[in-house]
Image (cartoon, rainbow, N blue to C red; front, side):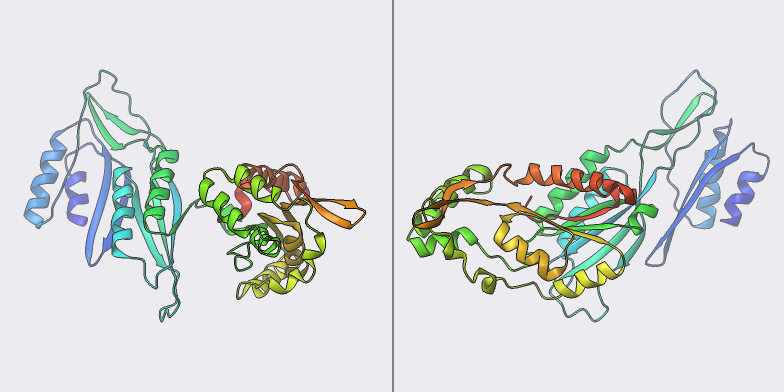
Length: 354
C-alpha cells in the first residue's frame, strides 16, 4: 500500500476519493477510488503492481464532454441474516446467496456466526454486514468516466434473496444497518409453529362431528393459494354444532419450548408483544393470557343461541385474518403505539405463514 501511495503521489495530480480493504483467508483486497486528469496514472499503477507482485484490475468506460467531477456514492450498509434449520448453513445455500450478492454488486464487509461454537442444535444463524450500492456512482475525470458502482434495485435484490431462502428452506432477513435495527420496541409473533405447536382447531372440531375427511378434502383442493375460500368452506361445515365442543380446548395447547421465557424476558426489557394469527379466538386468547401478550388478533367463529343452546353459525366474524389483513394489523399497531414513536421499521416481525 505504501508503494502504491508513493507512486500515486509522485509527479501525478491525484485526488483520493475512497479506500476500502477486505481480508479473506489471508488474502488482502484493496479498492482505491481516485480522480485524476491523467489516464497515464493507470499505466503507472499497473507497472508498480507488477513489480510488487500484486494483481490489479481496473475499469474505465464511456466518454463524456462534461469535465466536472461528480461525487462518489459508496452505497448503504445492510445486515443480511441467514436462519437455517440445519446445524450448519449448507454450502449450496452459501453458494446461491453469494451469487445473488455478486449479481447485484453487493460487497461483504463482515461475517458473524451467531450460532454457538459448540452448536448442538438443529438450527444455525449467520450474519453478513454488506454494502449495497444505492445509486449509480460515477467520477468524471477530464474526458473519461470511471464507473465505481452500478445501481442496485433493492426490491429485486430482496426478492432474489427470498428465492434463495425458499430453495434452501431458510429465512434470509434484510435490515438496514442503523440504530433502529438495534432499538426495537415491539415484537409481533405468529401463533402456530411459533408460540405454540401446530393445532388445527377446525379439524379437532370436525373430527367430533364426523366431517374431518371433508375438511381435509377442502384444504387439499385449495392448498395455500386461496386461504379465505378454504377456511370459509371448512367453517361452514360446523353450522349447528354445539359450542360446548370447545370445553377443555386449552388442554390441547402445547407451547413452544422457550416461548414463555422469551416473552417474559422481552416484557422486562420494555417490549410490547403482539400475536397476529389466522387461527381462532379460543386458542389465541389462551395464548395471550398465558404469555402476557399486549395484543392478540385472530379469526372468530360466529355463534348464536338456539332453544338447544349455543351453536356455531358456520360463519366467521369479519374481517377474516389472512396475509393481507396481517399487514393491515401491523400498520394499526404502529399507529396504536404512536406515543412510543414507533415506526414499522422498529418492529421485529415474525409472521411464518403469511
